[in-house]
Structure formats: structure tokens, C-alpha cells
Length: 159
Image (cartoon, rainbow, N blue to C red; front, side):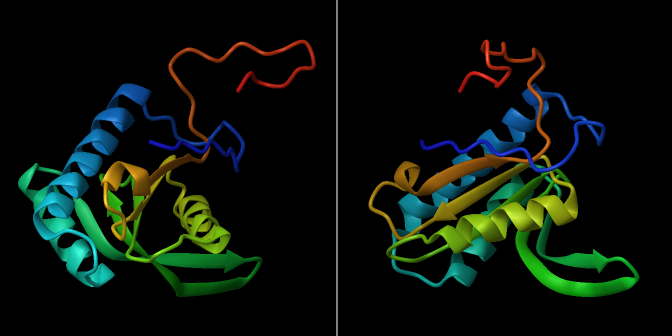
């Protein structure tokens, strides 16, 4: 499964242990795979959203579908500038797609929703693939592993 790591905000915001985040994302991915195996590719995003949401609630997770994403710029506040497909356990933004090809704007959309919702992790899931693991991208925003990665001589984290 492809992974993309991006840090967007300072590390002083809320911290959730990586083991809990990994449990949540594991359950989300499992639910998506279950839905994809049952329904296959080719349906509308809204169908996948309803089915994945159902599976996640069955697993005991808190799911907010079509979560409003407020946009605040100085004194300007848009209560519902955007909507995230799902916010799971208040920690993981899930964007569901059903398209032949994902574009950079799809990744940018997820990163923006994560940043605005202050969510540490996001999943971009494209159901229009033969094998779902090929359609899953995990992204991070201000996410720290329990042990910090070692740095190279140049002062940059090893990737």
C-alpha cells in the first residue's frame, strides 16, 4: 500500500499515540476492503461512503459523514467551506473516490481537510481499482511516531 508522509503544522498540537491511530486506520482499511470485495469497482462514491460508514459503525467507531470543514482566515469564517467524506474517531479524515485516475488535487484536498480539521492522519481511498490496496494512500499531518525517527547528517529526517 502506498504511503505519503507530509507534515503541515507545528508539533505542539494534540498528540495521539501511533498505536491507536494505526488501530483506527487498520479498521477503516479493513472495512473498505470488505465493501470493495462485496460491491466491486464502478459505483458512485456515495454508495461506497454509505457502506463503509455502516461497516465502521458496526465496528464501534464514531463516524461523521460529510463532516463540515470550517475555513477561518483572519476575521473571515466560513462555517461550511468544504465537506470531508468522513471523520473517524475525530482523528482520521477519509476521502473516498471512484475514479479511473487520481490527480494531485485529490491528494491536496485530503491534506487541506486534515489541516483544517487538525486531524493527524488521512486516508484517500479510490474504489475504481481491481485490488483495493492499490487504491489506498495514507497521509499524515502533525503525526509523530512513539519513537522519533533518526536524523541524517544534513538535519533532515531519514525517509
